[in-house]
Image 1 (cartoon, one colour):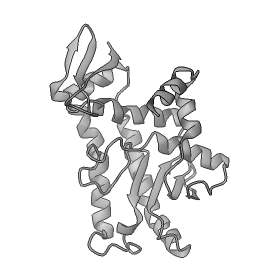
Image 2 (cartoon, rainbow, N blue to C red; image 1 turned 90 degrees about the vertical axis):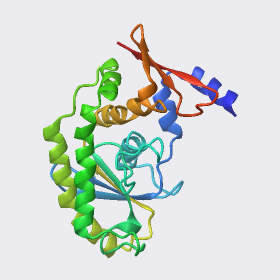
Image 3 (cartoon, rainbow, N blue to C red; image 1 turned 135 degrees about the horizontal axis):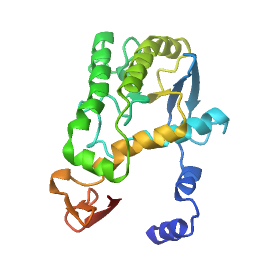
Length: 233
């Protein structure tokens, strides 16, 4: 199977397109907060969703917004499972009013606190020198703090409406609620990379830089592999 994958990617003219062509978004109810603050909804179920333009947009935005590992979340409490400030992925069963997990269901106040913490983490990470050095090697500019705050406000304002819509349409059985801000997909790629690159290695404390290249321990299998990043200053 691995050899087959190697052949596919070796012959691929556009690797990302090859991946996306075969990628299937996770089941859930997807919401997009548009530029005019209207909200679009799409329920995605594996192999049963029409390939509309909205579906294609969600597919690419979600691909760039997933965690690579639940042990490497942005939200350390693991309530929010997305990786950038244009998105908020959360399990439906812990949302206020509609949650079915009575032990873990959040109040509105607790949800707002979790969202605040999630967005603050992006700003805190800009102080991490090792992560910052990795991002410098791929020429990724600093976070736009004004845009981040705007996204946070939009998401917080939309959540009560989203919860009402889920309740009114009996969608609370869906595993995930995934909320997106309408942005160009290129922005999603950049912010996905901001999350991904500093987390490729097992732990950045072990990284070393040699001749403008960053080396570190593989996050896949520390015991048998050493991984070299394709970062060049």
